[in-house]
Image (cartoon, rainbow, N blue to C red; front, side, top):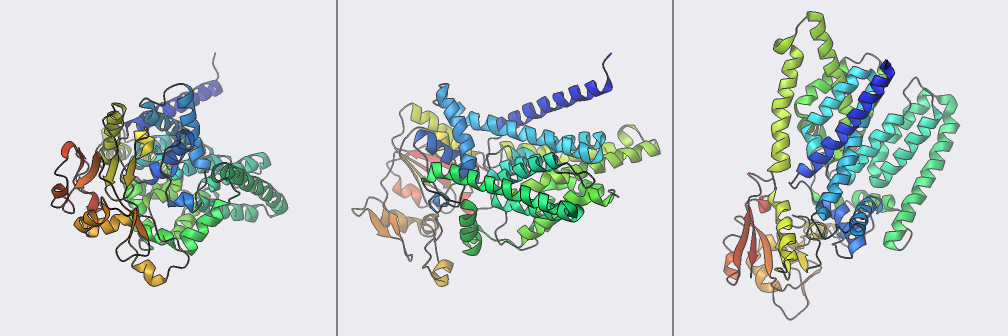
Length: 527
């Protein structure tokens, strides 16, 4: 006869298998574009390391990014190269499968974390919410550093000692995951600063033990990060210092957009959690044990500090989403208890109506964002890859806003490709006035497309000063293929200069776009 404990272990294993298969399928299902860092700060760098062709953005010349994250995908590319699949479509599928497996592990550990804090039923509901979350389906399976940061954070929190526990071994394991997550994203330190101070407050008698473990594991993490970076940069680099100096102290991140301080609270969290937000709030309100509010208080602290920074993005909220869903799972558990007390069963129950609301809101948005919205920006590189294999492409120019598509990580073959750049002003001598008037290469192009085409194409000089700027633009040659967005910026100008070209591909991209320069179909013009 099988005991209850055996049944629980077996069920847990099947849950892990389901989570892994679900997220791998999810990762392969996604064929849309969200943010450049998914490709340009991970896959492109790993592809460059293994195959020798890839585009390194300014972050790598400024050495503000750790090679630790791209190293994982370099490992995937090495495996594909070893087994002879690098010249197939697995060059795209391989990283997706790897990221899907990591994301499935994140879902599973979020379930275990909820189970550990609130019990088995909350753990089950939390797992259901993670699988229904449109934002998880849209972002977690993408190859962002934020995705890996989220996964490592959940791993660390699973081993973090609960307020009434005092397990030194688990704490050290948690510290290791904390260190790794900070290597990937230095801002993740906000989680562990708050949790660490709370831990010292709860166990003051362990202050020196906690301090010693923090210093030992912290120094080990720093050395690990520097050793990894040495392999890539060829010198000793501690990227978190450079990241803080360039992005925060010099304010370079502000060139990529600023939002008001209330953005995360009034826009970010409502969009990310959608109809799960009231359930999360209900779970927090039903939590009577203040010790169990530790993770909620951590989320509030992290979001408040991030709100002080000018540059904000939805994906920066990714690490707090699993914690929010733990409280959402507890909210669903309490809705179930209410139904049981009132003897309300079937479709008329409050719980069933809430589940229906979640399905009707999250699933359509999940489908639209993963299969429809901005899909042309990814599909175009798949078409280029196939044409390049056939030998039909000699060179490619992307007359689009910078980083609008994947690059060599998806095209793979070493055909000459060029895009309009958008590097920020990294010169320390630049004045505040120059910073305010600074324009990247792509901005200059879209301000005066015709003047740009006349001035910078087929010129005898290799470099020409950028209009009104303190830098030079490398002149262009007309390629065999040009990729551009068919919108009001270019559709009346560009065709006049492409009389020798024909339209060989037109792709639907989006019904709407927050960037007007990326609206319209994506067109490939060929000689």
